[in-house]
Length: 201
Image (tube, rainbow, N blue to C red; front, side, top):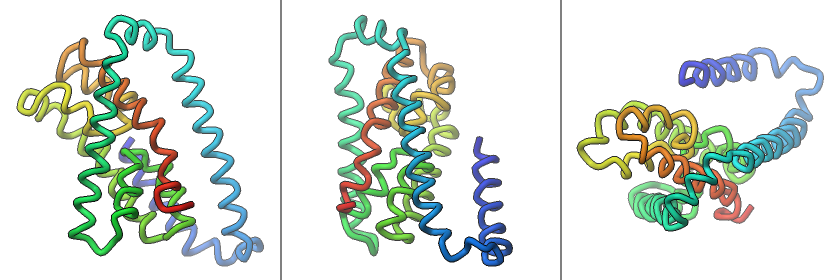
């Protein structure tokens, strides 16, 4: 997955620098790409909503453990906002910008695109922050699970806790943590669209 992310970004840079300026639609590129990105993001969100809605196992697991499990995503989301707000005190960006970048919760293909209308600089920060968050989760969950706690590591990769990192969580912890990991990731996933509202978009 990480390899394809790097390859996609590199190809985009090369095409944007070498070929796009020669294209007949170059002047209207920003408008065209902006509309296309919005459409694709809506389709992506719809697919994720359908996936969550048809997951019968998740509904069964929620019934078994109770809705008290929702305290975990709430704590993880609140922690992200609190610490990005604190980080802004040491960075040359505002508190709202730091919180908006952090609100991507590892969803590097969504938050940066939304923030592009606000600032290309903050969009780039959001992209790097959220890629690093997911990659750090993939690399560190097996190492830190037994050192800091099973439940705690489910918050590390952000939204990837419900998909890409779910097998990693299961292998590094135990099967009882899987439903918590899924709920944490799903809760963050549903919160990511707030990215634009934080900076007033």
